[in-house]
Each structure stands twice: as structure tokens, then as C-alpha cells.
Amino acid sequence: MTEKFWNKEIETAPRDQIEKLQVQGLKKVIQWALDTPFYGKKLKKSEINSPDDFNCIADLTKLPFTTKDDLRNNFPRGLLAVDMSEVVRIHSSSGTTGIPTVIYFTQDDVNRWSDIVARSIIATGARKGDIFQNMMTYGLFTGGLGLHYGAEKVGMTVIPVSSGNTKRQVQIMKDFQSTVVHATPSYLMHLHSVIEQSGPGLAGLALRKTFVGAEPHSENTRLKIEEMFGIDAYNSYGLSELNGPGVAFECEFKDSMHVWEDAYIVEIIDPATGQQLPAGEEGEVVLTNLIRQATPLIRYRTRDLAYLTNEPCRCGRTHQRLSRITGRTDDMLIINGVNVFPSQIEEIIMQIPEVGTNWQICLDKDGALDKLTVNVEIYSKMFSGDASQIEKLRSRIKEELRASIVINPIVRLHEPGFLPVSEGKAKRVIDNRPKI
Ligand code: ADP
Ligand code: ZN
Image (tube, rainbow, N blue to C red):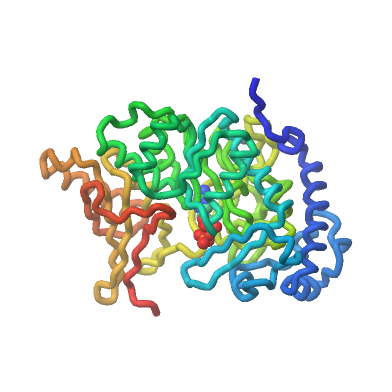
């Protein structure tokens, strides 16, 4: 029988055991962090002078938060904890403002990261024997290489195709009979429309599972992907500052993502006050990396919004589960004074069966007021029928959106292929309003 766990003892450890591992891990991280110019100063300011100042998990709140700006302001070596000759890998993200952040890995760091990615893969039921086509971008972005090393560790057959060139992706899926793929949800939707257009549809494919991540998506989007391809889709969460993929992953039950708590300490905080929130309450995800020496990271404010569940999971794993990411503290739109997350719009439109695979929001000024336009691709068969049907659909989408976000949007329907496609993370919001 194939194994259900990658590391059963750790994955099913009782709470007190997990906390013991976390305290041990954090002591190590503090030691590593004190060796960096940035934390050397920052921790001492918070009167943390040695790992001995940290003795139980409640002591975590004595430690200061770290932000993306801290990483940027200390670029390139302010958080480097080892001699550069020990570094075997660099990942970097340029972000939208163009100021880069950089993460260094020692060989041990890469090995530990690959191990939790392998654990994540096994939790979904993927196995040695699966043919894994990795459609996530390879390069400085962590999505491609992160899954690659974990999948090799599991013993899967890895096809490192990276993103883009959709026709070739489909050909490779057929030629090598890929059983598992990894991509952003928006790219999978695009892939499906290319398969549809190119003739024989899904015939000749052997696909059974997909890992989807790197961008927010709703439960309805997951269901749509599963239905389109007739496969299971597992949510995968990670960010380059915390190594990349493998921070939290859904198990076979697809009911929120297990955070691997021996590798990451997760907290949910109120973004305004910084206070910790209990399980079930939504707030900002804060993560401490326990497995990376070269760039230690303590209480990192991810700006992602979610909540935790500590109810036992049917799979037997004891590690807490993180809900779907509902948005980022920095992607909230304020439209005529109303707070709207793009994820709310996605959730509504993706539950309408006539809606196709791509959508985009535009914000403009109309005099003093903000104007919201929601562009939605719908299936081409809608355009061959009665025009009044299209109008009916348009009014329905408009009405459902208005009821949910309390703003009256302009809704435009388009044929498939009208909106720009992204090979990596989708750009869903075009904000043309002048910056104040
Ligand atoms: P960047 O911050 O430059 O986008 P990353 O490529 O590391 O850097 O992206 C990490 C971010 O991507 C996360 O903070 C989160 O906002 C988003 N993300 C990653 N995985 C998911 C997921 N499964 N669901 C929702 N959002 C995700
Ligand atoms: Zn589970």
C-alpha cells in the first residue's frame, strides 16, 4: 500500500509536541537571526539578547514583527545570516514598486524546504509514479523550483516545462500522459479554453490532480477547474519570503490548508492593532520561518487575510488549517467609500455557469465619483443565440454583484480570448483613478 504520510510522526504529533518543536525551532532561529545586521539590532532593541530569552510559545509576542519594507530597506545583505560561500540559492521578487527583496538558502535550507513540499504533495494523494508537469514559472520566482525539488524528492517524474506556450503544454500533457499539473488558477482556466479550441478536447489526457496557488481564488473557481478538467484541485499557499510553496497545502479532504507548524509558526493578528486573534477570526497572516538559516524571518506580516481552524482534520494530521486567502490588506479597493475585495467579485461571477474563464475589474473616475466596470468573458455559444439572452445574463451578473458589494457596477460581457491572459499571476484590477 502507498503511504498516506510523508512523516507520520510529525504530521500527526499532539499539540504539546508541536509546540515543543516550535520552541526548539525558534531558539535556533533567534540564534541565526542575532547573526544578521538587521535582527542583531532589532532583537536587542526588544531586549532579546539570546535564545534563552525565549522559553514557551507565549513568548512569541515579545518578538517584534518584520515587514516587507524591512526586507527592502535591508537589501541586499542585511538579513544574511551565513557566510556568502554557504549560500547555494538565491530567490528574489521584484514586487510592483521595483524595490527587490532577496532570500538566501544554504544547502540544508533547500533540503528542509523540499522536504515540506514533498510532505504537501503526499498529503494530496499524489505519489511516486505520477507524471508531474510543472507549469509554474521557473526562475527567481519560487513557484517553479519550489515544487520541482519536492516532487523529485517524492519520486514523481517531473516535467519542468515552466509557464507559457500553452499549445506546447497541451502537447506535452498528451505525449507524456501527465497525471498532475501545477499552475495558477487563472492559467488553468486559460489552458482549458485553448484545449477546447484546439479540437479533440480532453480526450487523450491522463490528468487526475492539480495543485493551484500563487494567487487568490474562490471556492467557486476551484469547483469550476475541477469540473472543467474532471480532476481534483488542491490549494497551495506560500510566499517567497517564507521559502515559497509548501507553507500550507490542502490534504486529500480539500478543507482548508494545513500549515506545517514544525516549519512555520502561524499567527493571525488584527492588522490595525497587531494583537493575536483566536482561531476562527479573520485577520492578517503572520509567519515565522523555522527552517531557513541563511535568511531568518521572524513574525513576518504577509498582508494576506485568512483565519485558522484547529478542529481535527479527517486525514489525521494535527497541524492547524488556514482558510482560503480572502484578500490582502493591500488589495482592498475603496470604491465610493465602500471597501471591496476583488475576491468578492470573483466569488459572485464564478458561480454563474455561463461565465467563462477570464475577468477583470476597471476603476475610473466619473466626475467626483468612482466608476467600477467588471469585464467578464462568457462562453462563445452564448453569442450564437438570442441577443436578449446576453442582455438577461448581463443584468443578472450586475444585480448579483450589486447585492453583494453594494456598488452598482457596469458589466461588460466579452467573447473568450478578449481579455489579456497572464502566464503567471493574473492582473485582475486596472485602477485608472488618479492617485491622491
Ligand atoms: P509577491 O509578494 O511578489 O507576489 P510571491 O510570488 O511570493 O511574491 O507571492 C506570494 C503571495 O501570493 C502571497 O502573499 C499571497 O498573497 C499570494 N498567494 C500565494 N498562494 C496563494 C493561494 N493559494 N491563495 C491566495 N493567494 C496566494
Ligand atoms: Zn487534513
